[in-house]
Amino acid sequence: MGVRLYKEPGLENPIMIASWPGIGNIGLIAVDTLKNMLEAEELGEIEPWDFFYPKKVLIRNGELKDLEFPSSKFYFKRTGEKDMLFFIGEEQPADGGRAYAEGKKAYQMANLVLDVAQKFGCQRVYTSGAAVAPIHHTARPKVWAVPNAKGLLSEVKTYENTILMSEIEGRGGQGNITGLNGLLLGVARKRGIDAICVMGEIPVYLQGFPIPYPRASKSVLEVLTAALGVEIDIDRLAGFIEQSDSQVEQLYEKFPPEIKEQLDKLKSVSYAQPTEPAPITEEDKKRILEDIDKFFKKGPKED
Amino acid sequence: MQEMQSFKIYGKSELQDSSLIVGWKEDVANLGAMVVDYLNKKLGTEEFGEIEPVNFFPLGGVAVENNVAQFPESKFYSSPEKNLVIFKSNVPRVEWHKFLNSILDVAEHYCHVKEIYAIGGMVSLSAHTAPREIMPVTNLPAMEKTLDQYDLAGGMEYETPPGQRPTLSSFLLWVARNRGIPAASLWVPVPFYLLATEDAAACKKVVDFFDTKLNLGIDLRDLDEAVTRQNEKLSQIRFSFPEVDSYIRNLESNVALTQEDSEKLAKEIEEYLRRID
Image 1 (cartoon, helix red, strand yellow):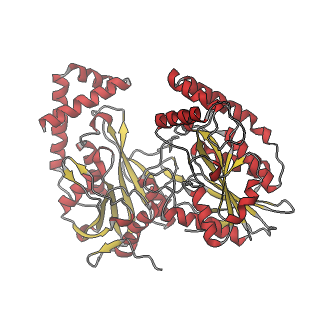
Image 2 (cartoon, rainbow over the protein chains, first blue to last red):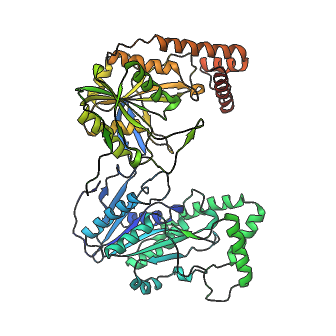
Image 3 (spheres, helix red, strand yellow):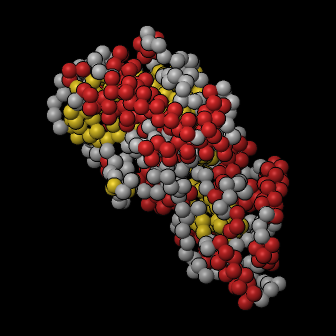
């Protein structure tokens, strides 16, 4: 069980950006887009066979030609100032059919990723995922940011369109980040590496559908590029977002009218603590959120 | 910290250049388990080791099947006279690579195997009256050369379709290839309406191959009788239920059934066979 590096470039103060699939593939789309737009080069991979069941077999003329596993790859980009290391996992290590990695395998993978980060001198790691929130799909998704050290809070507060757990009503700054996008933060903390997870919001009623949600990836990308000081043409996601919006609209149209009526109220509701007068009363807001929560039997959560 | 080995061996093995046959309990139409159970019984093999379940199966309780509590089993049997090793196991739920390497550790270091065969049933849309055939997939040219001498259906072309995963036997072949051990999976198409019961004809086809290839000298008359009985039962149901006969006639004429008709045929046959058994 190990890492295979194809090259060993010298990197200047690199920052690592890592992501695995999750709800709406929000983090994965964001990180993959950034990696592609910056034309990052392939650096290496985590050997997959101890983490994953194969995903594809190729048999030709009765001979087993190839067995393909989900990839877990590293990439790098020299920028002249803060260089970048990317890690993109095609799957979270499977463990008894669970969607999100946990336990020994997840811990091993998180450590391997951070071994590479430290080998190249990384002192900062970003991970990215989804935040399931009572928002409407026409709203601009916010980004929930969770750092792994108190000292990072002041920096995170400067990020645009971003909120902390303490700014979400009823949470008292508490929460949970499922899977490797979260675990990496903890393992980094254990090693004394600063890390921040940025999670794009996805409407609560879309969390169960296996569809990408690039609208939230865009919000994540805006935060990441600003934090990293890089410029990319985020509008290149526009086509993908348009396609996804139309898919979501089609889905939304299929909801029963009474549900749609409730969900439409989300357009005028903010679950975050009010900073300015809301268009509806606090009592109305509470009732709407409770109704929706009851309908989906789930509260806000993150991955 | 050194990891403990995952298997237990009860005795000393004297095998050299042996052959290993692997059968999975969760195989299509139970073919793998049926073949290795038959071989174990006919050859009087002895259990000599096992892979401990703790690292590979969730042990939060037991599953109950047909009113009986089950427990995962991964056992090795041997027949020193026939220079044969048999491995029968449930399909592990986690740590597949480690599990397959444990099989190969026992195979290589305790039994000195020269070749491995994994049995696999596959769903066929053909009628039961079509002859069964073995479609091999090999992992090294040496195995391909070995199997060329036998009358097997060659040239399988396959790529895992989206949304599906490869079989554990394919994973086994890949791990064996990385260790330089020639291996083959032997795929036998089983008519879809016999999946819920068992297909004696498919079992006979595989046992027959092993009997010839490994020179086992098994008296196969009981299997011949089982195939005859199965065919008689299927003839009876065709005679008693014209609708079933018509479905099977379509399959015999290479006319595909609708999903609904296929499900109906499978249900009728399963219920009938269970009723008269």
